[in-house]
Length: 157
Ligand SMILES: Cc1cc2nc3c(=O)[nH]c(=O)nc-3n(C[C@H](O)[C@H](O)[C@H](O)COP(=O)(O)O)c2cc1C
Image (tube, rainbow, N blue to C red; front, side, top):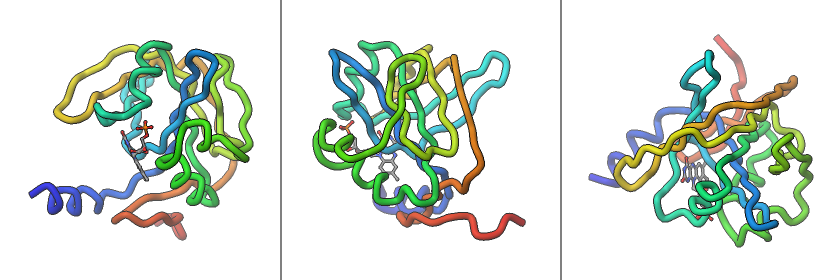
């Protein structure tokens, strides 16, 4: 059931993000495709984190996160941010800092700097709502994830 469900869900194409936080003087970050918009006024977003994720505690304790929407050329970086130690994930990766001080991935097509504004337990994940304090977007093609493959939107209908 679980594998079939995973396969069926993977047919839903998404963008890919890296979500970062900064806690105890250290950067944390993980690859995430569950990011989505919720409300425009006020500006609220969400994503879901595996309850076992090592990023959960630093995000909850620091009270915020920053979402970098990855560009089409970031496929390798997306894999880097779901492996290794958090320190290793940032090694050799260009970043700049959001107003909150959290890391933004260089070349991201958009970013959202958020205060954590709600946690909803949902099975083996937690939904993390975020109030957007600052954001930015720029020209560029986003990275797409579908059926466990990275790609790009070749042509928009
Ligand atoms: C394309 C892609 C999308 C992912 N989306 C999510 C997600 O939405 N939520 C999540 O918790 N993990 C997601 N992951 C898995 C995490 O990036 C991975 O488990 C990571 O190792 C978690 O790191 P941590 O345990 O150190 O926080 C995704 C991985 C990939 C490759």
